[in-house]
Image (tube, rainbow, N blue to C red; front, top):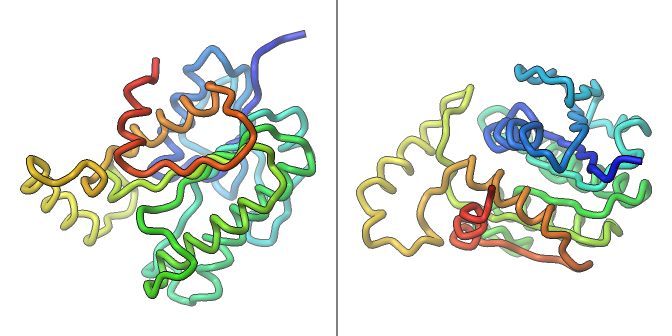
Length: 223
């Protein structure tokens, strides 16, 4: 019997998710990477098993979760793409929490999810409040180990241009020499690396929250 791991990736076509997919298939610790979602990833590899499904309506097939050790969730939308607040919450809260609950039922060991710096269910900002509510629902899902990653502005090439992120990147370039690392923009690839580092560290059961500067430090451990 193989001692290698199986991973489930949700959000594999996004900025962090696309890096996760690349690193997971390159990593010898994994013999299968299941990608669940609406759109098949551009990357092709014999390790990848694509499972097409309606994530918003929680049409999660059993085959996605069986024998999976690590579940990586990098799902998210924007208010520009999803202006309706209930639809927005159905994606940013409903999908991660639903995946976490299903992961618990099928005995996944680790659930690793991308959130945001400043996430809080008490925030007066809608985006940060939604991320905070997502975290709370994931934490009570029943998965033994929850790893929450709170990056600042993500650096990387998106399929869809985001003007706000472009402004933040310019600002980061001008201020990075004196700005504390926690508040600096971070490479999406570093977030992906940090998530895999934590999964392979076999963390003890519980909840760990990683801020942007800590994510940068973790990423340096990636081999």
